[in-house]
Image (tube, rainbow, N blue to C red; front, top):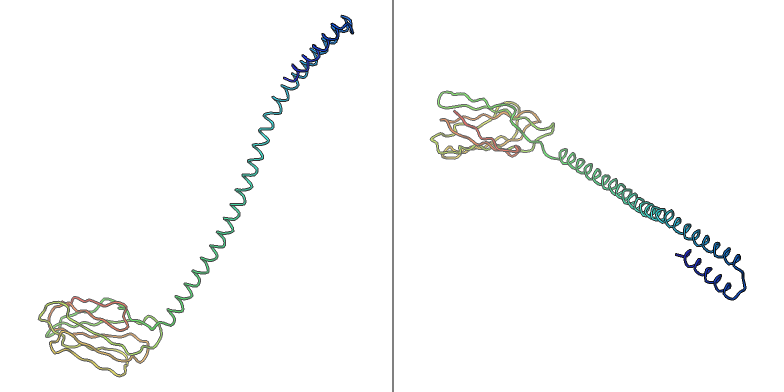
Length: 223
């Protein structure tokens, strides 16, 4: 574009000078040749730069944008990593605190009893006999232990005896209801030894045994 404008201007100037008689034909032709060559040269270099530098400038712009984007993403990833590490530390501390609290609770909790093995049930004269061995959860003295046995279904069966065996105890006492469906006993063990329960019923039945130091009741089918 600029080559065409400049070339046109030079041509007009040469024509004007030739008309006024200030230059001869040879010199006018020479100036016209120079004008044409200059216009072509300027047009060529202008188009070449446009072709060469236009895409280059666009590519440079894209590279700058990508660089800014990568820097932003890098900062975001670094921030996320820092926050993740901090959160992980908080979770680890919370888990450790929970574990410590559980250990403290377990250490300070009173011992409990659990069934050691399958109850021993056998038929005897006048009914059935059941023996249970209960193990302590840890080596710690017990407070007063209370047991309760109850026939839990419609049955003619009655509890004939509800006592204990093995080991020394203190302040032992027991009681059976008038209808023979419920029996209780309580005592203070002398140590952390096993606790043995003895139950006798008159007929086959289902019995629930609960205890102040058992986590769950025991339901036995006696037959």
